[in-house]
Length: 212
Image 1 (cartoon, rainbow, N blue to C red):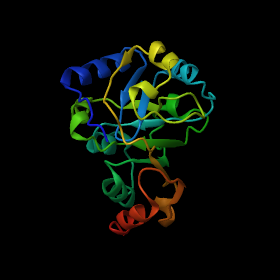
Image 2 (cartoon, rainbow, N blue to C red):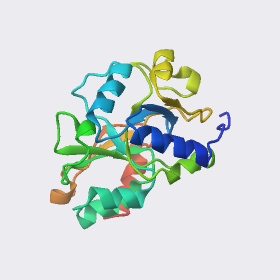
Image 3 (tube, rainbow, N blue to C red):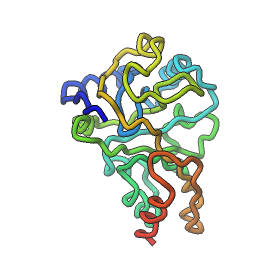
Image 4 (tube, rainbow, N blue to C red):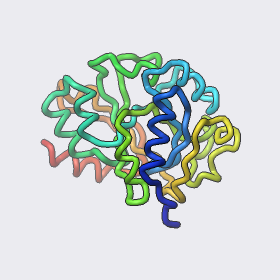
């Protein structure tokens, strides 16, 4: 795999300012290129969905750039849920949780009771993004239903030109996150894999077993 081009603190600052100002940004993650905005800004969310051609009722993930802010912002988590989040995050997974705080409605869309959470395991070349303090609403930087972007050149030109900020992180692994439903975990300890992606099911089982 080609090494990442590398981002620095200035890139992280620009990303944070873009999102805080109501903008839409294309940026690299630990899996594929993403497009993001403020998860509490409905106008920015509508613009992001328009650029992707994504149905407006479909939810998007809320990405935090470090685990502790995620645990703090999500609040009201059971001890078991916290253990699972610490076992799986940071990592290439999206975790569906009960949205007990009622936050991030622009990302939750029609299902306000559910929030999808991402905390990427940032490689060295992207580690500067860890200084982005606020979470972002994140989706893959592609036209809805089309392949995910492994390089910036793979991101559709219309999306790059329509975004307010574009960050190049070089070549990424190219496999999207694994999606795991944890909404029943606090009640009965059950979880369901909705999409196997960058983290294989056997690896998820092993990590989940460490918390039980």
